[in-house]
Length: 238
Image (cartoon, rainbow, N blue to C red):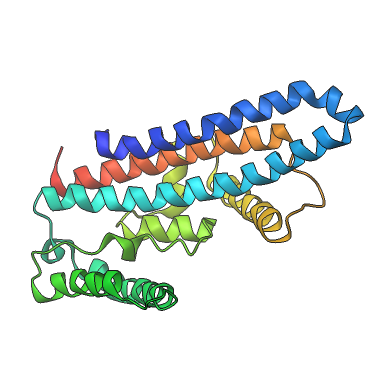
């Protein structure tokens, strides 16, 4: 696997390791937490926060993976002209959406400035004016702050990887089936939204549940890396 693609997996693993350590510490301290309300509250806060952090780590990986994918293609001389209409369609449609989000964020600044938005416009126009230029990777990494199963499938499809979660199942040698991947991501996003938006959960996510989520995401991300690396090889050669 190419080092730049593997790096996304490594960065997730490094980021998630402190969460694993915290969950094991909470497990070890659980008898004391039963007697100490303050300690129990601290544990619950860490557990809620860990779920939200994992969502951010997964979203960050998907974005970095797209960026690295197009960097690899660009290094091999693959511009829009060699990628085809499907890439151009996503570049324009989703790139326009990304631009709208950038303008909205920058318009809130004081003093108002649209420097980043203007720079992105130039990148958006570049492969239309000159088809040898690369697409804007941000157009292919529109996670909407919500790395759901639908988002994962859309990202894979945008990179030209066919088969969606079925392809992902194959890339991880069936450790999770496509239907299980979809259900686990659905459950995770529901839990994440409850923890993030309400600040609480009817059922506090247990350390064992969070450890299972870290393991699942590690396997999921490894599968995405493998599919991405294979697609680059398919397009450009080893």
